[in-house]
Image 1: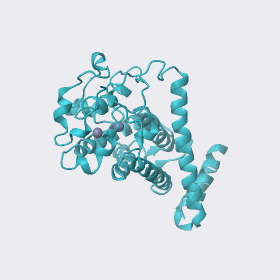
Image 2: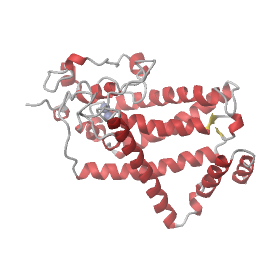
Image 3: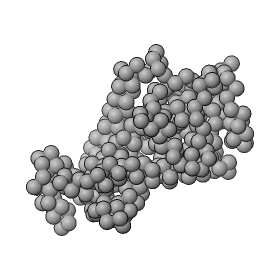
Image 4: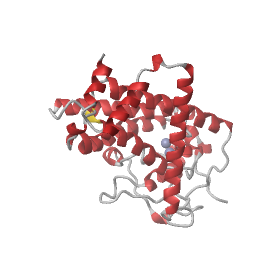
Length: 308
Ligand SMILES: [Zn+2]
Ligand SMILES: [Zn+2]
């Protein structure tokens, strides 16, 4: 069996790799699981997700990025109270994350498109692949997100996420979306991994993306999406326009027709939907962008609530 062969091929790498291989070997085929395996798996992933969310908020606050520190000012009123639909969607999306994580591991194990061996790590299948993963991911996400704002479709799916005009809960506000939107957003990661792997093969740069790049892509994706829904003024160093939490705040609070991307503003710049942060408009009660008023025709209740 290919899985056994893959496991054997891992035996000449490090102990850590062998333990990781054994772990994945145990869980790679859900058809062999007992009912309690599903419960344990879901519990492990939900716990890990909650832990990561707490770490993001904890580290941000510890670094002085929180409410009493260098936080992004609220430009619109917060959704302070979550209702039953919010809790239902958040719960469903946590369980969907368990399913998605399983599929990422199964893909990494079975597809032959993910390179496992440490000695096969190259610049192309790690660092370059990681950059390509975010670029490819955001191409799909940017277009999908834009489509979700199409007025006939908007009330059915994406309107729920825009109940929150000033995200501050991190992961909770990030995953408080309609489950359809969540599934597409999550599995777009798998699409990106497969696309980058095919590109590497086509370019003669190996058989696929390295497992390390896949892991960083998925985990950092969770961290960055969480950060996008905090008030932490995090900005990627060196290349200023690539990632800034403020850009997603603009999308929520000021102009829903701008900054559709999740991780990099590249495609918003390309498609002409990028809007830079304007410090002078960052005051709760300011008029904001009048474009926002026209942006969601027929959805006036979704406009940011200015303070009285
Ligand atoms: Zn959002
Ligand atoms: Zn949106």
